[in-house]
Amino acid sequence: MALQESGEMYLETIYVLSLESSTVRAIDIGEYMGFSKPSVSRALGLLKDEGLIKKDKNSYITLTKAGEILAKRIYERHTVLSGLFMKLGVDEKTATEDACRIEHYISDTTFDAIKAHMKKHQKG
Image (cartoon, rainbow, N blue to C red; front, side):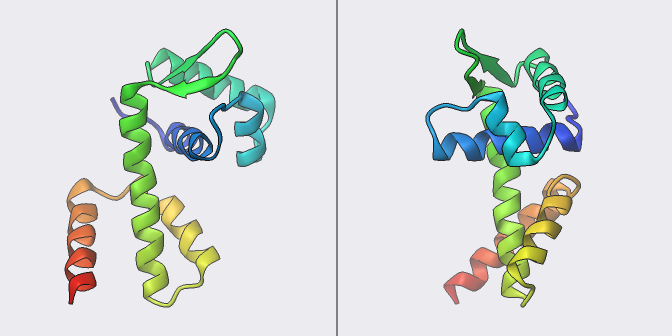
C-alpha cells in the first residue's frame, strides 16, 4: 500500500501524540498539525478505511498494528534524518523541517545506508 505524504504525516502525529498521552482525539491531531476539523476528519476516515487506525466509542484514536509499524518507521526516519542534519551543523528548526520533507520520499536503501553510517561513526 502506498500511502500519500499527508497520510504518513497523520500517522506520525498520532504516534507522537500517543507517546505523550494515553488518549488521542481528532481535535488533538488538528491542533498539533494546525489543520481544520474537516481536513482531519477526512484524513482519519481514509486512514480508518486503510485499516491503519481505529476509533473507539469515545472517539479516541489508536493505531492498528499495521498503522503502528508504518508510523514508527516514519518517526524513525524523521529522528534519524534530523539528527544527521544537526550533526552536520544545521540548526534544529531547519533540520527538523528538512527531515519532515525528506522522510516521505527517501528510499529504504538510502535510509538504511544513512543509519548504518551513523551507527558506525557513533562507535568510533
